[in-house]
Image (tube, rainbow, N blue to C red; front, side, top):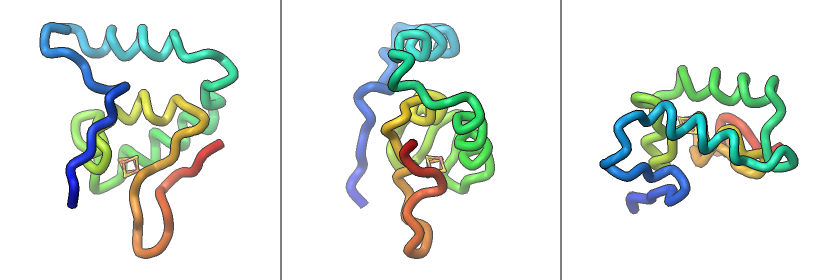
Length: 90
Ligand code: SF4
């Protein structure tokens, strides 16, 4: 498998407080691009029990799931036995 990186989610090594960095990033997503709260919660719930989830990140795409799931236009990158992703765009 080719290793992929989500450039939006790459956090420089010199950033000590990654939670704060993520929080600031989330606050800057324009409201029209932000996932509705209920959808956001269901996406994070799906990620939390996914075999590719590790320490807040998706091992398939390299994104912090809390950032990826917050974007309306994003989708889960997984391919689970012919079913695309655990959550969809929207
Ligand atoms: S594969 Fe999909 S459900 Fe699993 S951690 Fe990545 S984004 Fe979340």
